[in-house]
Length: 421
Image (tube, rainbow, N blue to C red; front, side):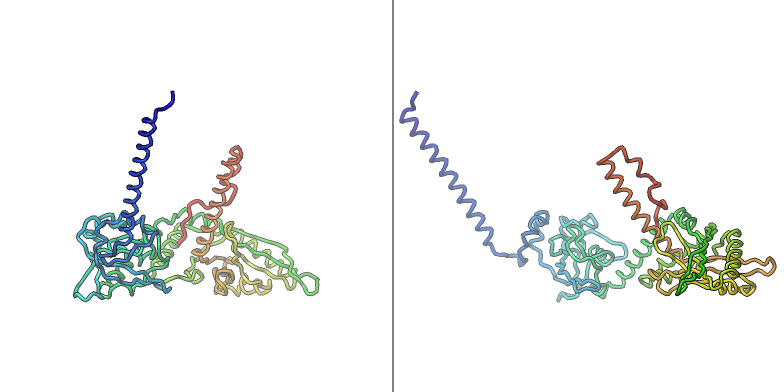
């Protein structure tokens, strides 16, 4: 049935009315946005960058109305610095992400609850709240301690610098308190880390260390080249006292306030014995080699399955080694140093000590080792191998689950729990 003119007219009037309403609403929205964009900053605070707009939604409204003192907190070594807005407030809506409580009531042990504003014209002015450029607010003493102890990144959005804050950025009136607090934190961290050193891990490392002797004969080539002719090796002998001494030594070194330690200068663990059978064997081999191979050479080394670097002595002539270390000349005790140029340069990292006993006419051999370095290197290699194993296990689980049994504890050598200093 065809529509009547009256029905078409009513429909047309309805469409026009709807369009007018939509135009009015659009015009109202545009006017509102223009008004907001052109409104001056009546609070004296800078306009936030676009990337921080989302972060600012969660900030208390009062933050836009607070005046504060601006301070520059600087990094310890680089030229990085960040501008902090410090102010005092009783508003409980400012929640510190570090302390998880209002900045006006937060307390840190042994640290004042406020931050001095030395640059402020008002005497004894202090602040309890700090606002970073990223618009996140914190309890001022807690953020300063975080910057001093870890890095200068915002704990919320991680904006900032990876360096520690310079202690000189702390006001002089409270600087000694922060120095003492940092020292206490450092000591507790060290004690916690050292308590996690597993004695079984130390025992596993020690049980895999071997002392090796290699003999070389001189070839007839021109020039003569040393040819490897024989090898003898044995594992060191250790006891509970050695493990205790290692733990105590590592704790003492880590607790020192001398800064970063050179591992090659760390104290050695002494008097690791070697098996009597090995002592008799090398004395027999070395004596025979000295007689039968004029110009022969000998070298001692320390090896470990997870030690990619060799700890070894310089090559010695068999005549020198025999006469100076395995005959009555060695009665007063002699030693042969071990080196690893990759990590210690010319600094000895171990010693082979020999002492000839005239009563039994035998040579007693002990070994001194920089066990700190061996534990740290082997722990690192063990962690790398464990990471590789886990990656292979995940790959096989995804691509070929039937082969997962191939990746087991025997695929790579391990030492169980790691725990270097």
